[in-house]
Image (cartoon, rainbow, N blue to C red; front, side, top):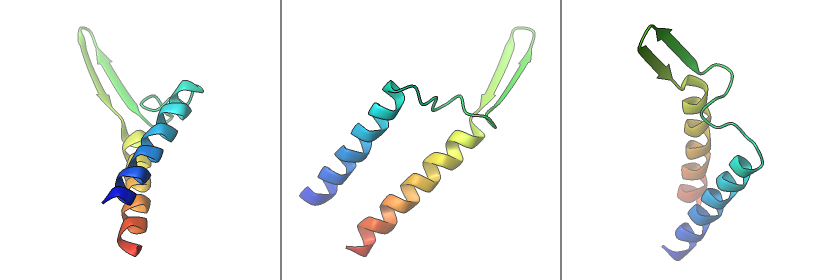
Length: 65
């Protein structure tokens, strides 16, 4: 359990550093925004795929050990 918490902490810290360095998580190319008057719909397609790939890789590493 302790090892898992350390790995999760390192991943969260890495994500925070990437965002501080200017990585635009949530505003990547492929994220869709639809504006119609006062209505705005935002769907983060590319960001969702990126988060899914990272979480899948992390879970694969957790199950492997």
